[in-house]
Structure formats: structure tokens, C-alpha cells
Length: 297
Image 1 (tube, rainbow, N blue to C red):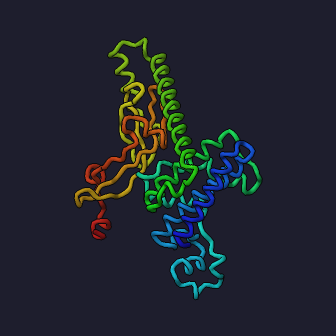
Image 2: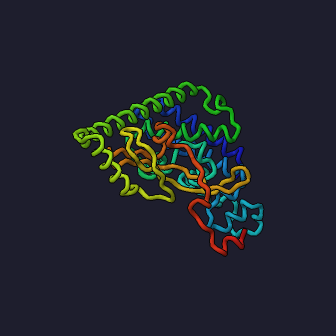
Image 3: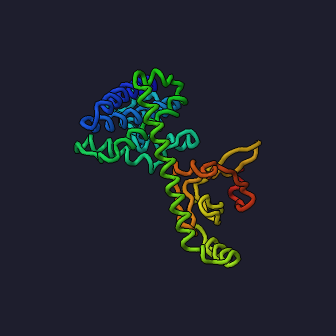
């Protein structure tokens, strides 16, 4: 449960993962498995640096006792302490470092599936190897910054391979987004090019008035980057402070446009005119606190 031990373990597993990846397809199973473990251990290192209790299974009391320095009262030894897995470790860290970590829960799923598939049954999706591997690298990079770990030391002799894989992923994501926008523009033209401007305006206003296709904690209208029609940006909310004033912070997760069928979610939003940026809401604009809440304040 010690942060330094977890950081060192993460580096060893990642070195083994990069070595396996560089050896080619015959070692890709080792690569995705080891990279997944490296990511898990670094996530846990961040949590353990805050407090060791943050990496233990919440329902295992003996593990909680060991993590809080009261192991003398535990029935099971520290060697049997139960800690959380990759998915839960990511979920906990992502709640704290939403802005810093670009990998959301959906993007992490293939990593967890590949790591578990190799560990439990010796299989993984060969077609997703590079995406899975690169996702681990991109998850680890901001954690190194938060933990004040020198990237050159962590990546070692594989630093150039790391940089090349990241660059290829960025280019792949950019091309994919341009393809999505082109498809959406073509759909929009096919549907509405025959309408006169005024008629088209009425039709699009009626479509927008139907509300968002995806409902989350907060939805806001935004102009579609493909067709410029009103679309919907949906996301989660959390409390924050701006100039000693309580605000609700909206973290966008998905943008949808019914006019051209564009649907962009997760990290892809970062490629669209700032749609990935968090924004603030004044609770007084749409929420009236009840008497119990006011008494609590």
C-alpha cells in the first residue's frame, strides 16, 4: 500500500510491456497484460499517496484496518489485504483528476478487457492491441506529472517508442473526427439542401425543440460543429467554488445533433471547438433550495 513501492512496480511492469510490444505480434498478449497492470499500479500509487485506505476494498474491514494503521486489530494478516482493481482505481482517480486524465470509463473498457482476457483465458482482441496499449500510455502520462515522477526515468530507453505511439494515436483520432464531421455534413445536405432558407430554419428549430437525444445530469444547447444547427451537450455536475461563490461545474460527456446525426462523446469532444471544456452554472438560476438544505448551511 506504499506509494513508492507501487510507483516502482508500475515502472517495472511498463518496461516489460514496452519490451514485449517492441518484439512484435507474438508478444502482444504480454504487452497489453503488463501495460494494464502498470496503469493499475500507478493509479493506486496516486490514491495511496492521498491515503492508503483509498485503494482497499470498501467492504473488507480487515483491509481497512491495515490501511489506516490499525492492523493489530485485524483478523487477517496484511498480506491478505484486498485492494480494488483497475476499473475501480481508475473511477476513483478520475473523480479527482477529471481535467488531467483524458481517458474516461468507456475508453478504459478495452484495456480492462484485454488485461483480464489474457490473465484469465489467454485471449485478447488482436485488432485493438495498439489502441489498448496506447490508452495505457496516455493514462499514465498525467499520473507521472501528478506524482512528480520524471517521465524520462519512467519510460527509460523506450521513450521514443512512447512518443511515436502517442503521435500516431493523436493523428488517428484527428482523422477519425474529420471523417465523422464529413459524414454528418453529407447527411445534413442530403436531408435539407432542397429546402429554402426560411423553411429550413423552421424545420431545424422544430427538431431542436424536441430536446436532447441523451439525457444526463445537465444538458445545454450548443451549435453543431458539422452543420451549425442547435445540438445538445450533456454531462455530469459537481460542486465547485469561483470567487468564494458556490457553482455547479458541468463536465461534458457527449454532444448530439439530431439534424445531421453527429454524435461525439468522451475524449473525442476535445477535437470540437472547445466542447470538452467544463463550464459553470449558478445554482440560483435554476434551483431553489429547500428548508432542510438552508438549515444545513
